[in-house]
Amino acid sequence: MTIVAILSTRDASGEKSYRAIAGEKHSVGKTAGQALDALTAQLGETEFSALLVIQSFHPDTFFSAQQQERLSELMRLWRSARDRGQELLPEQQAQLDYLVEAELRAATARTAALMQPENS
Figure (tube, rainbow, N blue to C red):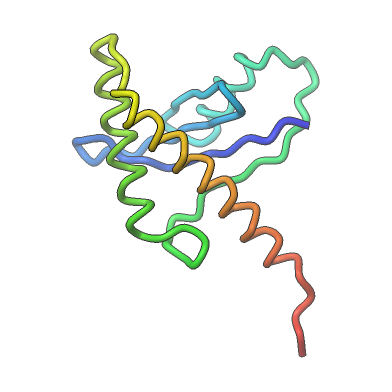
């Protein structure tokens, strides 16, 4: 099964977009569905079975406001570099990769917390 994370980001003008990520592959779209469709095409799977993780839009104990802000900032830088045909600086790319993975782990932890039976 493929695990896909979908992150909401904003560009320098404040326009919202979505980034879908599965391992080394990623895509961007104006909607979560567009990003997912573009990613699915890259994966080349005729029968797509995946666990979708959509980023929480509010800071929580799993992914802080500071982490969200830095992730958005790095995504803006990534888009700008991509549009110029360049790449992020290695330390920026490493931090972006780390934060994407951290958000995926946070989403997994959120899901696990939601699935826990409530202690009455």
